Every structure is written in C-alpha cells, then in structure tokens.
Amino acid sequence: METVGQKLDGIDNHLIVAKLLGDITALSYLIQNFTECALDTRYSGFVNQIDVRIASSHEDFMDSSSERLVTEQFYLNNFRSNMVPTKREVTRLLKVKTTLLKILEDKQMDYKALAYTIETVEYKRYFLSGRNDG
Image 1 (spheres, rainbow, N blue to C red):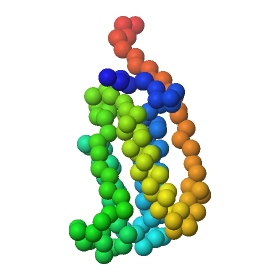
Image 2 (spheres, helix red, strand yellow):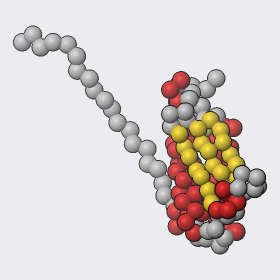
Image 3 (cartoon, one colour):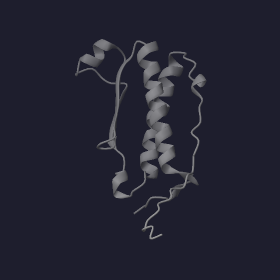
Image 4 (cartoon, rainbow, N blue to C red):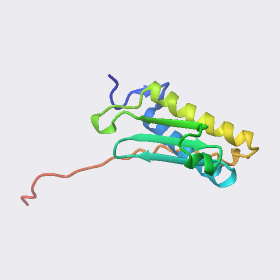
C-alpha cells in the first residue's frame, strides 16, 4: 500500500493529479464553448471522483441511447486515508486528457495557449506551547 510522500517517477503524485484535473477542466471548457460537442465534466472532492461524459452534439447528449465520445467515471484514492494516487489512476487521468486533446485537434483548436505550471511552495509552521511564568 502506498503512503503519503511516496513519489511517482520522482514527482509528487498529488501535484500530478491536481494538474491533470485542472487540464481536464480547462480542455472541457474549450470543447463545450468552441465545438459542437456537449459535455459534463465533474470532480467531486467529497468522494474524490471524476466524471467526464462527452457527446458529439447537444441532441446526442440529451438522448441517453446515443453513443458518447467519452464516458469516464472513477474514484481516486481517498486522500484522507493517507493514500496517494496510484500509477493506474494517473494513467486513467492521462487517457482522459489525451482524448480531450484529440477532440480539440480534430476540431483544429489551438490548445497550446493553455500552457501553465504549478509551483510547489514549501512552508514551515511553528507552534508555541507552554506557559509564561515570568
């Protein structure tokens, strides 16, 4: 079982997942607003679940019998139980992101303008305890 602080290929797993979730959200926004596709992308922090559903049109999205371009729904490891995301979960998120990028490429959208980085900030917390007897 993996524990907090373990690394996936030398990089903090939580930052990888945070960036992938952000990328998926940003790409979903572009797909929804600049293509004819319709989608619903959700991340629920309470249960640590991602849900992405995409159809080729609004009509197809509303018609439950229509085939979806993307249907992905899965839970990430529970952060509160001191577990970190696994390689399998990161791979699934990468698959979703790659699929979204493919949709944008097919629609000839320039998504490379979305480049951004996540900076890791370290800080220390000090707690004073005891009584002042002086």
